[in-house]
Image (cartoon, rainbow, N blue to C red; front, side):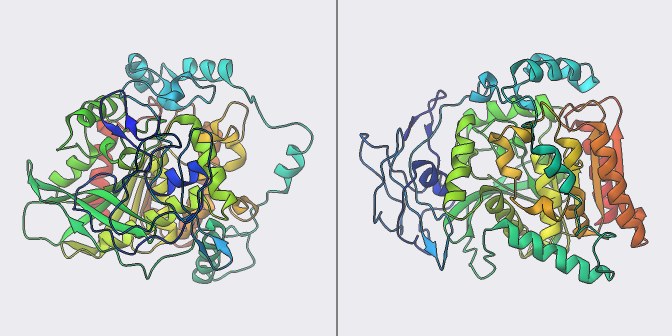
Length: 493
């Protein structure tokens, strides 16, 4: 379904880079400025081949070439220098989704979001983990690594650029070298010189804070609409870049963490998600009431930039790779740029900016802290492990689809996940995990925590690192965990 209505009656589009790449086309450069009104939804739509007329976003160049794709529309892409960067225009390939049903729930590629709301209480108490693992084992198409070559490749992963293993003995020099390697293997270029050109929506007064939309350029290829919450009072305030999870639920992104104030359909979906994973709370609104400016944007494929269908993720990633670019690299770059934008707001104290996320959002939080010094602290809930310990039969990382948002080809030849997170040392970092979380085996969490602890200890900053496993919890970020994170932020910022 492209350019149609979703099952909730709303217009459903995959926007920007995602739509063009799913369509598989090529195009001319995107315009530098989006003249659409602040707070608007997708700025343009191209219907699928055989569909109706197209509506182009203001200021965008038309397609210079059309490549038909089965079930998809036309697409645009821009080549910069020798590398195709995966520029995208507005195009089709939207997916039907609803608040209670996603393609993932019938897919063999099972994820945490596929556990029904009926099991939430049991999982929170720890009783649902065994059922979850049984469901994964029963439905998995790929039940482990391919035979023959995997053991040799795994043995070759020694992470030679990790702190303590690398020949570089000066920590600041190591941080520069490690960050440079990550930068290189993201594939997607930095865009430090691209103007954000923000357009702010009208503020809406809430309980102790103001909510508004802001539309900005995180890259030169696409305008992105984010939620911005500002506490009452004069400021400047501490701030949090809030990063949403994956969950195989694409109809909402930023709305998983910030209560939508202008869309009743998304509100119903968001409230169900908050009840399932966040103890009924909206984390962003809680932070704003506590005096934090909050910025939260959709990653490509979610909310205003989607919704994707579950099995479109791999196709989207493949198109990025074919264009010499990377889906995971794009998300990493956009998150770092969002952190820079937030730190630069007049209402924000740039010395007190943190990144906070749950699940894939936690991955994004420590990755952003590694990539930019605009983030002075990070709280990461339910995403930290050792790579080798994660690559076990049945784990999502071996199946494709969702894993492509967190897959940087070649990086494991140099650094493990905790090694990348350690680039942020000795800044304050918090890592929470659930002992009953089926997505992250306890031995992987233990390995990662040991590596992280060794790095902060080497900097005489172990008190700035908080590592905690909650023995009775699974893959959740419930209210008592949130309260601990909020109190920690108050202390470290």
